[in-house]
Image (cartoon, rainbow, N blue to C red; front, side, top):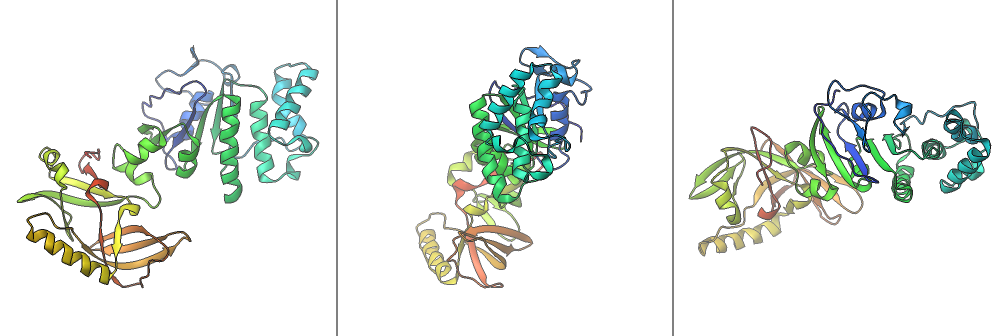
Length: 362
């Protein structure tokens, strides 16, 4: 996938993650920075140098690939030394740098082994070491953890982040794993179909997504979306078909400027699920609230389709009209498949998007 007019400025010593689905242009951007591909237009600066016309070896970058790309016939020492030998570094200095790098990565005992004698995690460290030993201006990493098992990947995320801070080397890291991106990056760039969607701190992107794509891509399980029409029934209401959700009082002034076709978004952890007995109590309270002339609490009828226990929580798939709504509940929540349940969500937790443009209105 080609990248389309991506404008990014990575700060010195920063760890920036390029995140997006497969084929969104992440690796293309990395390869352009590395000099492995040439952009049709635009400029690439590394530090104060314009590098568009420079060969990869002249850019002072080091790249770590998904496949590690170690030389199988060489020992770990030889793999680490190879880039230094190519740069005509004196032998004594090569030995010193290789041993210092191996010590930092805790692979000093592996220097006489060949790649086939190493575990996946050890190979990954050697690949990192080969990049580090040159002391480059920039690290470029293309999904370097994707071949590791889940437990080792979690461990190596923390190790890699710690290492980057110790070395203070500017790093651009490509992944399609949002957990990896959110935990590792100082800032995260979200890409879709070659277009930069949002660039900022992980917390900002999560809590303040700029459009429907970002809101749906970030978060596990993903955000629930409801196509709505904004109507006025005394007050403004989101008409989603199977339910009508009153626009919260604090948002009524903003609603006057919204288009009629909207998308309502709510994250699974903000969906509150009620069994029958609790729902009856809430309905009585809602009726009393309505008698006092205040907006009653809305309860939306739902049917439990699937229950996914995850240990410390459960993911419920709930049928609401034609919508399948995901909700996160505690592990002690009891319900059977097919049970009638009720859901609601607080007005201060919703997102509102323009259906035509996909841009966030709230």
